Figure: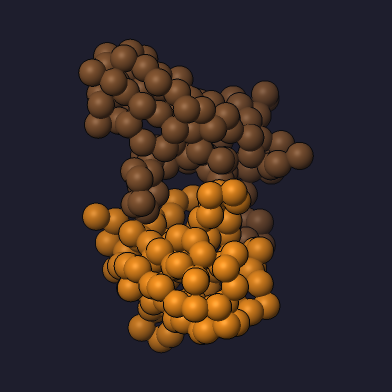
Amino acid sequence: DSGVTQTPKHLITATGQRVTLRCSPRSGDLSVYWYQQSLDQGLQFLIQYYNGEERAKGNILERFSAQQFPDLHSELNLSSLELGDSALYFCASGQGAGETQYFGPGTRLLVL
Amino acid sequence: QKEVEQDPGPLSVPEGAIVSLNCTYSNSAFQYFMWYRQYSRKGPELLMYTYSSGNKEDGRFTAQVDKSSKYISLFIRDSQPSDSATYLCAVNRGLYSGGYNKLIFGAGTRLAVHP
């Protein structure tokens, strides 16, 4: 157990809908990272938050957004969902120095 | 060209074999090198972390980094069926790159250790 929690574990929804994925980092970690893992793209970095502030953006679509709250948990919002958004979404946390990140169990999203 | 290249396998070995997993990377700015293990439908689990060049050993696992050739390796000794998983290498520029700390992953190598 990495200490990073993610909810829900599974999510099934329809195209055009909006969903919210939640992540709680390990105790003491200030940084939260979001990744998407699909069969054809592998693990792709989406966005990083550090102590409530956006620190870096990767290949995140404009339909996707995230935030980190004062208690350091983070939410990833996915809107206007498309079939191609079906993937595993992982949250990772770390101290923010970048050298190690610990991953949560992931949320499996299926868009029908 | 991808920033990190990793042969996706699959790699099938008998129990007890020594396994060698490898990645190459393109940018000499990378300072941190990691190996993650991912079981099917689970989150990646950090196995080994190395800063700069050199070797690091942890039980049956040894990580090697050769920055001169931009080559990273993971060796598994006395492999067990429980080692069957996908192994992902990852690189990172580190803190002093403007705080941009994303991990860049290889595609992952699927390993099967059969009894």
